[in-house]
Amino acid sequence: MIPGDFKVKKPTKKQLILLAVSGIVGLFGTAAAITVGVFAFTAWWGLPLDIYGFNEGPEQPIAFPHTKHVQELGLDCTFCHRTVAKEASASIPSVEFCVSCHKIIGDNSEEIAKLRSYSSNEKPIDWQRVHRLPDHVHFVHEAHIRFFSGTKNVVSKIDRDKVSSQITLEDARKIYPNTKVGEIIDVKESQVCMTCHGDVGSMAKVKQIRPLKMADCVNCHRDNSAPTDCITCHY
Image 1 (cartoon, one colour):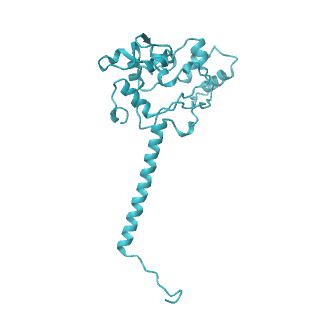
Image 2 (cartoon, one colour):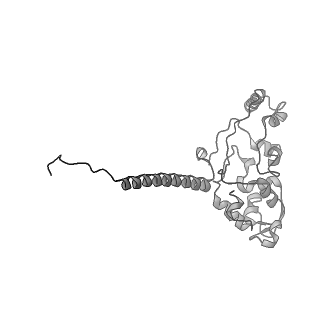
Image 3 (cartoon, rainbow, N blue to C red):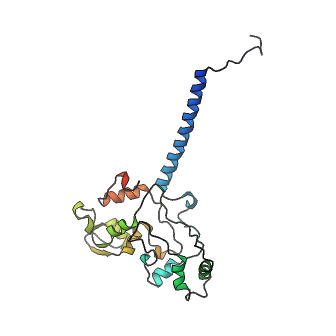
């Protein structure tokens, strides 16, 4: 063959069809892989990408001092997060709920001045989420508060026949650090929050004490003889 003297061979109809099918399969395969990757990542880390630095906690529009309200004033979680023991969501108090106290308290505080500004302008506070589960996970606070609160016998392993009256040593020590097996403890509704959120009342700025992983939920359910089938949390 003389250099340059050649003809391009056109693909057959069958080859074109195979090429098109391969392209479509490849496109859907890539999309599926990305979707699975995103679900796996969020299920494992249990927090959105924009607050990946969970060790520090996000900056908030108002520096709400949990330490002052909990340690100095003696308020507990349920005073502000009023639906936590009754509904799926813990809820964030409205601006007017906060202002009901701070209309007359905190005249010299910069942060309370911000709060009053939100109230006078009738704007909600754009709080930054600290704890967040993926959209495909359903967590009901009420059920967990009800299960862990009350009078509990501290045990190393839960007896399936005595689930409602027992608490594992690991969970008990998140509330009372010096607890020992065999002791009887009284767990308030507001104290249950510490098992996942840590001692928020002593935090200058609220942060995650650890990323919320699916393994944590599964292990806790196993330890407490709770259901571990997928539909319990994913539906």
